Length: 355
Image (cartoon, rainbow, N blue to C red; front, side, top):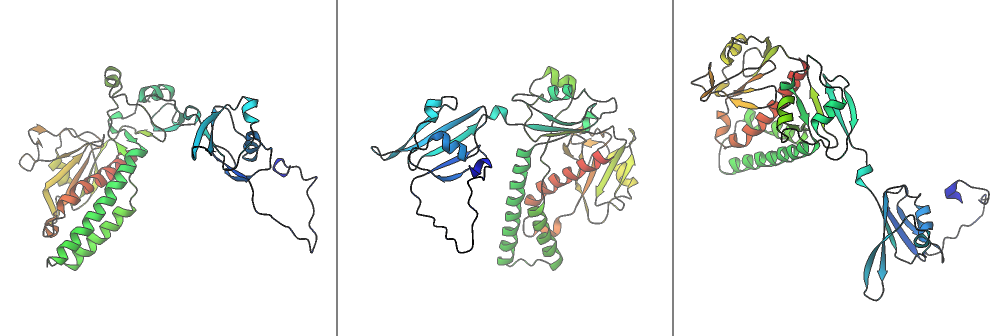
């Protein structure tokens, strides 16, 4: 009765009263999608329905699994109980019974978020199989100033993978430091402190989980592979058209410049004061608005990337890396490079969105 809020038969305690709680006899457990999971003692004659009531009841679209000890086989038998069949619900409980309540995944709410230049940005529910195009259509489409080339798509599963990679990299760096010291390599105090600080940042950094997508609506309609299915927790952000080029890293004055089609990578670096002494122009790269990172070829510095030309788009970020030679002596460059690039892409994404 107390479970239902009825206290008419509740007894008011007085000073000197003794409450005796005997040893528990028969008990059964209820677990899963139910308000009050737990182990409940039951009296002789109480039923599966009584245990469900103890747990707070079940909703629609649920399944109830009964796990019961088979004394003959000394194993557990698993059967499903029909929540709409009163004859099954009235079956008496036995000691050691467990009810597992599961709910259909089809009715669990799944939400994604659209940010930026949508007609109706906000949080939307999705169903199994919903695609990016379908969600964009429900949001009223994109506004005229939407810059799809700079779209940022974030996914929880990708963030989890990135976090694992960061932690693994931190472990590898610590191992490299230990191996270097034990092999007699002299590491200057400043370099050691910098790497130790970097390892701590790797462990504490929470990746944004960016996944590179091509948000070209016409291409997505022609090629279903580009029109990926949405998952719960996805975030799609479409910024307004950017008018800047960002230059960061080992330059004298890291800054943003107005985009001019005639200017090359080296032109923008010169506008930022040129490279600093600690720069390594062999590791200069461009992060395009869609998140793709392309290395700049030293010999074709003002013209291109390898055998093809660099097409700088508004919202691109030019990253001039620091010369890693001081760290080459204990071979951490191969570990650092992909992580630094990943972190730089994240920073560039934020910069492009904030323009």
